[in-house]
Length: 528
Image (cartoon, rainbow, N blue to C red; front, side):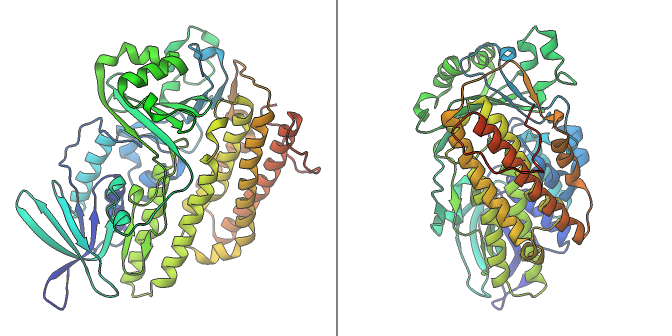
């Protein structure tokens, strides 16, 4: 703790919110800067309910890497949570037979691990771990107000707990208050990103196992082991998808996510309405939910859940973490990814400040990079929900979206290059090309969908059968030097060029998309 000129004590960092973003940031800061004085203010009191009423249970590669490797929690995650069987997609709109429709996923788990997190269990552990590591974690504390300092002035936070009212002073103030967005709302930083989608979700205290929904032995044996229930299962239809996510507590999370224009929220914003909506669109899920409706744990809905933020970091030493800043879409489970990215930039800025380095240029660089990652991922979701019931298009889109993610963003994170400004300057042409390819391909998918012939064959599109795709996943954790990182990303962008041409050719066969020029390096047609 350091002292200000008026004799009042000032903490190095005060974090508003002790949920997933706030606690992981505190742990990352403790590891990066062991002498830092960190205070976390959390309204709730632990222990949280095991099946906590929070969304965001499914992790993908960056979030899993952040929790497991950056924070050093791999052994804990493997011991206490569920090793995920990847992201899996069923095109089951209107069908009650899961084995008679197209399935897209993997027959065996990919090399890079990811997890299904039971948020109550996980956040209870994070709170305990924060205390073990010497972080001042104040539970049952309500933030009453705050004043932002300018220049070298400290920030002031007013809060209250069972012992009364308190005033804290902070060199750094980080808002991790989730959707409450205390700082974002105060400064009017919320951005309408044009992605208007609603969600409702609930948990039942029973395991839902799609593997048990079929008596077809061949269908069951498509996966090794036959444990599809460990996947984040997406049951897809036009303008919507339904998630099934298992939790370590033994409960199961069920969510409905839908384009606001195609499926109004009022159709599924109560448990009873959600049951009726599922009966119309996903009867197999409706049947399972009805079977265990008496074990309902909670229900929640969110209107227009996706939003951007015009500023997340400031040279006046404040920052926004997690959903206190921005949120994209749950379809590919990127919430934890952007917690990881944002927290890493916040840690770097605090480290720069501790080293006496000027912040303004660094804030501008990290802000620009974060926003570019957000905007690139937004292209994947915005205006794309009408495609979700189209097997032909989605089989290609999901492959593209993963290749784009693994080939560029994951490389930057896993190689610890998020703040490597020199690397971004060196690779500017390649990164710009990757961005252009992604924009072009998302438009291609929309155009393809308009002309594609409806198909829904009862087969599995096994991503394990694409050797280049498996290799791309397996190589993410390679340890590379400076030259190796640059060459890997350049190779991956060339692969994306080839993949874009291959997909465009497939789309052209279905009509509606102009045939691209010949390419000698073109990849084989997807899934034969």
